Amino acid sequence: MTLFGQDKPIRAFRDALDSGKLHHAWLLAGPRGVGKALFADLAARRVLAQAAQPEGLGEGLTVPETHATAHLIDAGSHPDLRRLSRLPRDRKPDELARNISVDQIRGIQSLFATTPSMSDWRAVVIDAIDDLERPAANALLKNLEEPPAKCVFLLVCHSPGRILPTIRSRCRMIRFSRLSDDAMTAAIAQAAPDLDPEERAALVRIGNGAPGQALHYAGLDIAALDATISALIAKGDRDSSVRATLAQSLALKKAQPRYEAFLERAPAAIAAHARNLSGKPLETALSAWENARSLAGGAQRLSLDPQTTVFALAGLLASLHEPRHDA
Image 1 (tube, rainbow, N blue to C red):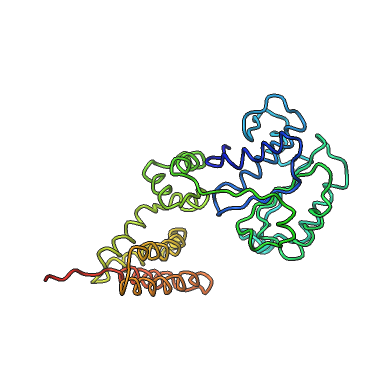
Image 2: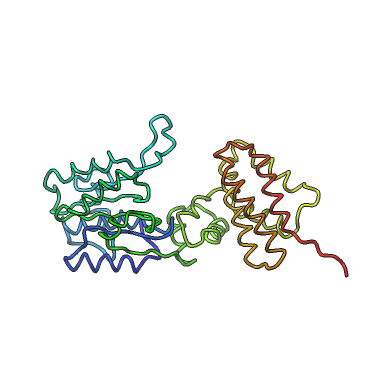
């Protein structure tokens, strides 16, 4: 996989790696979906590959698929690498646990109990450090305070201001930015090559520089959904026919992913519309946004009826329409 649009982080990490003075802990900070987790995986792969067999490696963080390190990592059997993320729930394996547990963090001690197998380096990837429960964060801190020799910790972080200051102070931070449209297009094409150009363009438009977020909407015909949202704002829905049709279509069981997308897109569309307003229209839009955010935020948590929820959200969108009156 190629990481698009993050040349500065790649260059900063490679400079440190090639200098022979690689910091033991890296905080990879930035918005969700811009490539931090992919960077962490590629950086860990590069460190381990460069330590084991430096010949024939590519530019940046590239490691050829034919490299022995790549084979082991792809098979999930590299003995000198640990990757931690939220685990599936015991009773609901299709859902993830709320946090990364302290037992998971303590489990990496086995990595340090023996000497490295493939080279003199080891790597730990945590995706994301925001998900650590408090005891897990404290357990990780002990490793960062007294780091094992030649081990790099790559910590994906969405909100660096919310993690323990003692962890943050022991890491070198790399900030990741949102991608340009060209980089977004390339990243989405790589991840979902079968998308047609129209849907790919729609994902670029709504992704706000985060391909990971945009791909959440892949296959949902978001362009059509956004067109309906825009029409409700621009034209209103005097006879309620548009919102009724939309509510019926999104209430179907097979439409659950599009329903969830609508819950995200409707408040966002109201917020975007409000940015261009002032005076009374702005007050109306802000009120609609507050109501839409509250309704959409509680819809699934409170198991609200999807058809009723969509109809109400669509009504808030339509309320932003200002009919023109003849002079």
